[in-house]
Image (cartoon, rainbow, N blue to C red):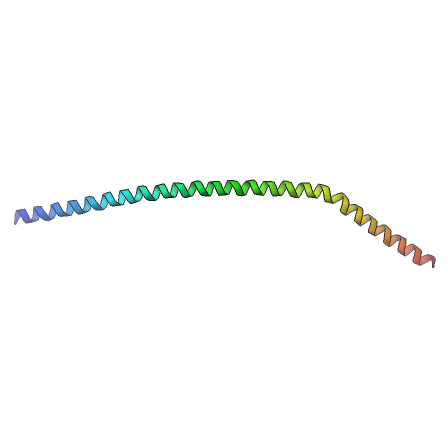
Length: 91
């Protein structure tokens, strides 16, 4: 009976050792995959930040270029209305 218990203990130790080694290997693989994914996420976020800054610079530049034209168009519309109302009063 003593050798049967010893054999069962040996089998359990072997099974537990194999399971533990398998889990360690899987953990290492998963950690390396997660590191690769995090690097890709960082790269994507850096590109998104760069695009956002480029778009904001573009909008600011367009605002500086378009604002004078918008103001002049508004002033021209006001002058046309003023002249139109002035000529209506004269008639």
